[in-house]
Image (cartoon, rainbow, N blue to C red; front, side):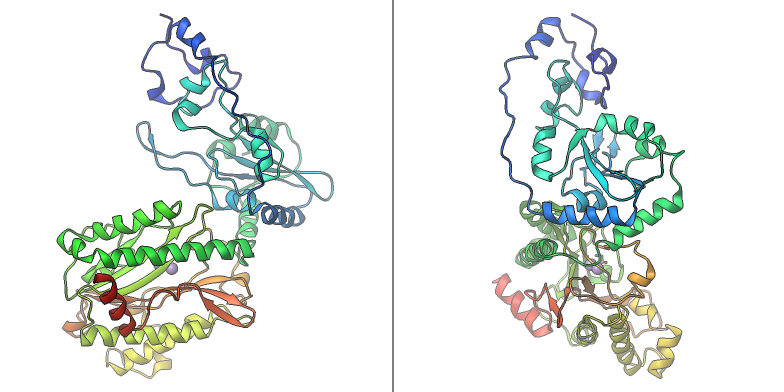
Length: 485
Ligand code: GLY
Ligand code: MN
Ligand code: MN
């Protein structure tokens, strides 16, 4: 028996991360030699480029034009430890996925300036595992442990970019002179290697530009968003079908049911599902989902499937658990529905982004004043923002590869900006009466209603991408009756 190999004894020039559980057994010379050979050549040739390759090339060209003469570094990010040697499942950074279509952990896109204008883009990836030095089966990220990767040549065919070994990227950047920018927050090691070359302000500009590059979606992205929404619709139907099982257990049954649809049809859920029954509906980010599901109460389900290309839906429906709204639940629901209708009507090209929020809030305030919950007139309430005790959040946000997409775009291009065809946003007004809110009649307490749809700005107005799910109370009751059987 030889001593257990360590990264240094693997004879790799640049050993990659060691997984603790890779080396609990000794390795004889005979075994080491045996593992080096007898493996088929599985190299793939004539691969077709990924469907979005033309779009990613156009996005990189826009990035290149915005930062001439500068080196630009866009990391995919690294695995994050959950505990000990167990990691969270990997999700590539949105900037990296948008510019490459790749989702490989540790990947890095580098745009190298070719002079005063133009760049050469290189995709740095972890190549196939080395079999000669044992990396393939002894390293924690070896392919024997985590599955086959694309070779660099396969990556070039798929992504339409020159590919290089990611273990060389830090060295290549360290040797480079001239201005550099990196998208921060994804790859601490690379950021540390570039500390002397970058500034926070300049890196923020890069991040902000990449956020703005996603404001208007191309046809590939719109089709992906529609796929995400369509899967989400099926996930909501799944939930209605099993409400009796949720009543017998907890909100977790709803979470698990939707998750199954997301994992079978997509990559994942796009954010933590909010499966809020009864008074939990008044907690905006109720993701514990461990409460009871009781007939007579409402279920607020806010969930979205993320596609394999990482585009997510973001949809909310509020439904009576027993299939029938009570008069008060219906009254509150009707107010939120009217607000959403007003909001959706305000989504059109050339309109201000804020219009849909203002339109929806005005309708909500009108109802709150009418119900005697706040003293009018409506304009006074709006000016003082008094409705926010019960409306709590903004009426929507951009949607795309992130649920809250384009979040670091500049105000003038987003919240103070103008809507354009190809933008996709949520319209999601709500009313929430906390269980301990003594300022509202007792019967209102513990009721929360939100209706959220995904709205695409079109040339002549908008299209509700999630219209396949019912929205009026009557339609919801009929839909539930049909699905519950
Ligand atoms: N699901 C998060 C949101 O609606 O913004
Ligand atoms: Mn939502
Ligand atoms: Mn939303």
